Image 1 (tube, rainbow, N blue to C red):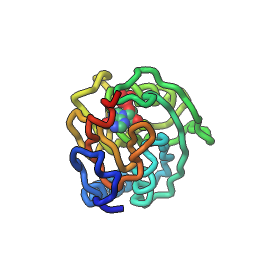
Image 2: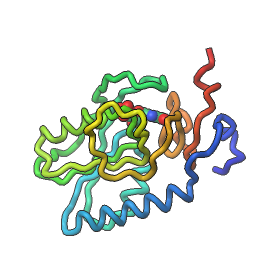
Image 3: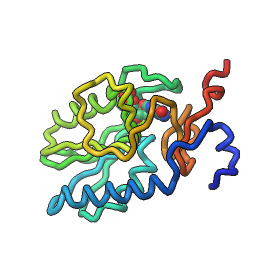
Image 4: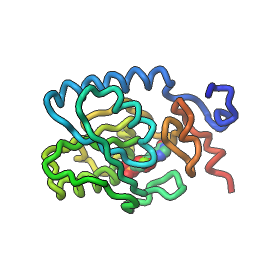
Length: 187
Ligand code: IMP
Ligand code: MG
């Protein structure tokens, strides 16, 4: 899909291009490959937002990793977090003794990842790190949340694309863009 697509008309501007994403994801994959040398981590994709990032990232990691999937919901269709996290789909495999890497689309307030971190540590993960495509540090509520790997720090704007949605749409945009406020401020 290119930028003449109709979907792009709902964006104010493109914030991160597909080329920039591709370079960073490759770099992150190489970094994780080095950091986990000799180990076999399990990468956990947080559905649905992280799915596009996840499939690119795992292919950039040269390790005998395994994959698992978890679905949670903290947003509804609004652009502000509800602060309540619900588990919609759990992991298929136990993580006792495993080196876990949570793969998330974006860290905003940090409420979602803080909840997930606690759940996975309770289940006996040997180690736990967090990889996020985007970080909005200005909006953090959980100040001591450690995000180990971040591809891009972004300003406080509502973004879509490369897996991120507004009301379940725009996930298939290959670039990341700022959604026009007119789209969500409609009565
Ligand atoms: P947190 O719990 O406030 O950190 O929210 C994290 C979740 O909110 C992410 O996994 C996203 O699903 C969603 N989210 C936060 N900011 C954005 C955004 O700018 N665009 C799309 N989704 C977002
Ligand atoms: Mg999400």
